[in-house]
Amino acid sequence: DAGVIQSPRHEVTEMGQEVTLRCKPISGHDYLFWYRQTMMRGLELLIYFNNNVPIDDSGMPEDRFSAKMPNASFSTLKIQPSEPRDSAVYFCASSLDGNTEAFFGQGTRLTVV
Amino acid sequence: AQSVTQLDSQVPVFEEAPVELRCNYSSSVSVYLFWYVQYPNQGLQLLLKYLSGSTLVKGINGFEAEFNKSQTSFHLRKPSVHISDTAEYFCAVSDLNAGGTSYGKLTFGQGTILTVHP
Image (cartoon, rainbow over all chains, first blue to last red; front, side):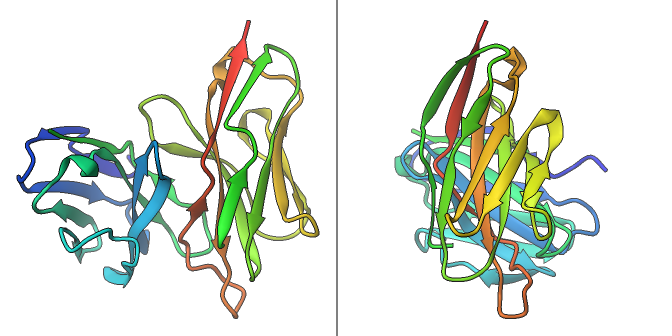
């Protein structure tokens, strides 16, 4: 398996624009996680899914953030409208079940100017 | 877990010297424990994990860690480091539910930057 695949790797956008980050988890993994990494706050969980269903979105910072998982092989994280403070590296991760380790993608580095 | 504390933000060390990266956690329930490594501009890679059993766990690249339940610690060690070990290391914890299984979500420490000098 190619691992967790995220796209794009880098995104630069202007404030106010909509941004969509994409993730393809490892085939057969039931859990999918979205994390955000910043210098100030470190790695923080935004939302996670089990069998395509959102389980815990308490880490989503604001209503500007939304995530979907329409099927087992694809998830999106959308920010609308984007703001400069959303600049961060966003990681997607998947795990086989809740009792095994999470495998991380390479991340999307988002810069909002 | 309520919190994960990595006691050192930066650890400089010379090549072939031993190293210990410290991690303490706070949780009201049982936990699984992990160490991940992040190389520049890359994702996180699992080094090792403690789920149950022996409290001394061995991982990749010669790293090992020991779970100490009474001290709520999970320190990472390597007896002899290489230049290629230069990276950022993250300790992470996953809470277990009443059934003894995990929800899978991780709480991370702030990271320790290990710099190995020649």
